[in-house]
Every structure is written in C-alpha cells, then in structure tokens.
Length: 525
Image (cartoon, rainbow, N blue to C red; front, side, top):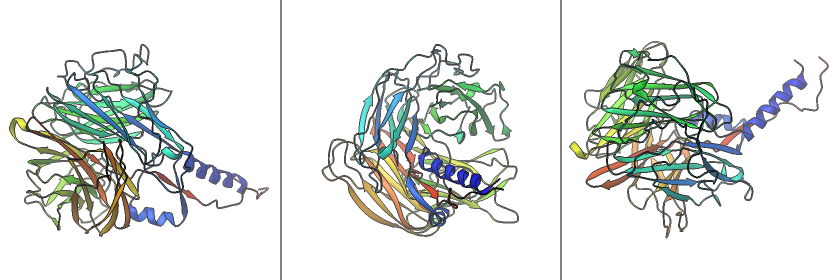
C-alpha cells in the first residue's frame, strides 16, 4: 500500500471520529489524559438516544426530561434535538409495564412479523421534547398506558452531552414503584447481571432498533450453574424503527433468582434495557453494566438501604477472585463476612450483603484478589431495597464506568435528589452544576473534593430561583477516577419509592488525532 492510501485512511478515520454518534467505548481517566496529549478533542456532531416503553399500567404516569449542557467551542446557532415514537409490533399480547404479565411475552421472538402490520405509536411523527437552547431542560408528562418507546437524535450544538431521563410512577399493582432510566445510546453488546427468571419476578428486556433495517438479536441467560438451557435457538428480529419487549422467563424453562443476560446483535444495533418487576419489592429499570473490567465500582448505596444483593458474572474463560470493599464517607472497609468473592467462569454468583451501609451512604468496590496470572474481567450489579414488609421498594445500580470529563443526570426535583460520588483510588476534585429549571431560574455551580477510597453523598445544588425539574452535571476537574450515581426518592403511601441512575461519562467529545502525513504527498510505490 502506498503512502497516499495510508494518509487517506488516516484522514477518513479522523473525519469519522468528528462526525460519529456519541457511542464510543469509555476508557480510564488516566488513559484519557494520556491520549489527550496526542489528539485534539472536539464535540460530537450527532447523538442517538433510545427510551424504552415506560409502562402499560393504567395507573402510571411518566415524566420525560431532556437536556444538553452548554459547552465552549460549540456552534451557538445550528442544531436540533428531539425524539419520535417508535413503532410497536401489532401483536398485543405483550405486557411490558407491570400489570400482571398475562401473556407469554414472546412477541417478536421468532421475527415472523418482520415489521409487517406494525402500528404507529401514539404521537405520530410529532417530535417529543425538542430542545430550544443548550443549558435549559425541557420536560413533558405522559399518562397513557399506550405511551411508546422513543427514538431520538440530536445534532450540532445539541449533540454533546445530550441526555434524556424517563421517570415513571406506578401507584398500584405488581409493578408498583418509581421506575427511572436514562435513555441509552444504541450498541451491539450489553450485559445485565441481576436479571431473574424466578416465578416471583417478571423481567422484560426491551429491544429498540433506531435504524431503517431490521436488527437480529441473540439473548443468552447464565445462572448459578452456567448457561440456562434456551427453549429456542432462534434469533429475535427487531423491525426497523421499532421496539420489542421480551419476557425473560419465556426464553428458558429453568428458573433462576439471580442470573445474567447477554444481549448481542448479529446484524444492526439496538438499545437494550431490562424492566424488573418483583411481586413483593416493587419494580425498576435495570441498566446495562459497564463493559467487563478487572476493577468495578458500584456507586451510591443509600444510607437507609435495608438490604443489598450483589450479582457478579465472569464472561471470560477464567474464574475471578475479587476483594470486596465498601467505600463510606470516611474510608473503605471490608464488609463483615464478605472479604472476598470467587466467581466461576460462565456462572452467575450472587451474595446478600444485608444492610451493609449501617446507616451511612457508600459505594461497593471490587478489585482483583491477587495471586498469579492476569486478573479476570467481570460485570456486576447491585439490587438495593429500602423499606420493609409490604412497604419495600427496590432499585438497581450497575457497575459504572468512570467520568472522564463530564456526566449529567436530568429530572432532579426540589426535594428527593441525592448525588453520590466515589473516588476508588486517588482523591479527585469535581465541579457540580445545577442547570436552570425547566420553568425558569439560573444555573449554580459548586466545587467538591472527594477523598480517595471514600464516597461523598450530597444533595446537589439547586438553580437560583429555579422552577421545575433541572439537570445536574458533574465535571471531573483533577485527580483520580470518579464514579457517580443519582438517587431520586419519592415517598408514596408510606412506601419509600426511589430509583437510581448511574452517571457514566457522556462522551460528548471525541479525540481526533493529528493528521500524520500530508495528503498532497504522492508515492509511486
């Protein structure tokens, strides 16, 4: 290959980095700092987000909040942001929203509908939550049981850091609870440790295809003894611009209270999210874990958690031996009776930690136990419960990637928001900015220090004279890696309803390498 061809490939790669969507694989903060010296970071030009069907319950109410932070170096004029309803397959036997699961949940499983007969969801082609300016959130409410999944794009000045929060309240029934999720970018590979095929749980994985061609998806479940035997080996077809909910217990005849779900695509890309409905402990969304890693941080266990259940899976060919530590407000300690954890390859391991925080907020840290040979990457999640008896409510915290530069949680309220920040290794400094409210006000920023090996849980700043929901953006200014989550709590009828959203880096910028060679140079082999 001659030099001209090499130069063209390099230029094309740089162009793709600038114009691609914000769906890049995150690395460590140290790696990001090192790579920044050899590349220029530029704002992404286009972002795609997918919101799952919120609920089919007649007693549900959903709030959507969209936001893009203001950023330096972004064109102040051009750009749009909004979401459109996805199509739902015409088979009306699915029950994705927690009204009792009266169906077999296999809609779309054999892909035979191929998108035929798909019906336009409520709302037609009218955009939902179009942004008018960065720095000010917009919000809307939806109380229909037919509320659709949403597919959205933001470009230009609205793309870098665009985030959408979906928060649903279900007042009664088996799906009772506060269910929250940040709408996610499409991808081809997802891990969900913490799912269940048990009779007391109804877990639906929602698959949403943002593109104009069908996507072929494989779902694999792994229990305590290895892979759960599938009831069929067929791939699932997700028609173009459509969403398909699948009840996990229909994929296998085996029952497992603690399992891990692996979602991969054969063709295309999708958004994936799991809605977990517990007959006794309420319901919430289970987000995907961060990519498999040898060290894991699970930020933001509430101080009043009555129980915490850790679920870990080792996807590789080697077992994993892990140290378990709880990073509290002052230091990191080893939970009594859970100093270490052995995870067999291809098997899901779950342990009950009880009221591990003992009245103080904390974060769970998993690191290699040591010994010979390389450490084994794992994925993990924590199921957290608040309340007791019939007044229980549950939420999930997945292993969360570090914030390289910034991350945002939308839909914060005047009361009930708690931001948790953990610095697993070195101390770090962050800036936290509350945006203007959806109905007015002005932003407020504060700077905080996080001591290495500790968790800082705080009520985030509020906008000055703010009204309505607002967004909170965390920027890492210096120091070691920082992992974060946001809890939104809402007491309802004596039930401590809550939901927790992790805050991975928003990937609002991409590294564009300097052109290594002049495109005008020619070489005749």
